[in-house]
Amino acid sequence: MHAYEGRTRGSRLARASHAIALLMLVSVFGSPAFPQNARPASTCSVGVRAPAFGFWNWRYDSRVKVYILAADFKREEIPYLLTPLLRWDAEWQSNGSGVRLDYAGLTDKRQDCQNCLTIMRAPVFNKKTRHGSEFHAYSEQNTQLVTYAAILIDPALTNLKALTNAVAHEVGHSFGLLDCYDCKDHSTVMNKLKSMNASNSMDGPTSCDTAQVRAAYQQLRIRVGPAPVEMNTPVDDGEEPVEDDTPIVVPN
Image (cartoon, rainbow, N blue to C red):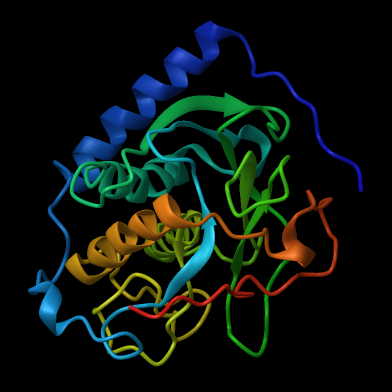
């Protein structure tokens, strides 16, 4: 399949858009919060309050450059895309990954550079799961370690809070977490939206999510698994959606 190769707009535009977005973000959300609904790890039963892990992972101690496709989002949507990045980034030490998420600004094409993540739109709505977003990744070594990735958000997903929830969920996949549709509401960011444009109030990882990411990265020190086969290819805009929950399931 065709792999996108793009360059960011001028550094001046990137810096300006970054500053505007962060100012808007502070005015809308305030400071990043601690994990939502904090609970002792002992109560985080897999499938009840916590997702299983064994999916894609950024390499330990990576600095991930996050881009937003400029043509796909309105200016007022940008802060709602950045909020979950801040929530996840705040856990870089406690979740044991060492992974930092750095907003790199707007771009005019999807980025396929090392440790790059592009947030963009594509028609991916899944009627069965009611999912309006997907996580797609590529591994140059054909392992579960991500080389570059994209979060695809359906054009019909327009509710601002739901945008935040969708990005928070998909970022969770990049830290090894699987969907947990049967988990109790608000126990994990890997739960689903009731409908594509209905917020589930999950802006970032819970303490159970953090505990599972920690376990996922401990497992990576022992064994790095193969890439989920059908997702180890960049996907062109408009391609038929691919399920994002093909696991190498490692129960807690």
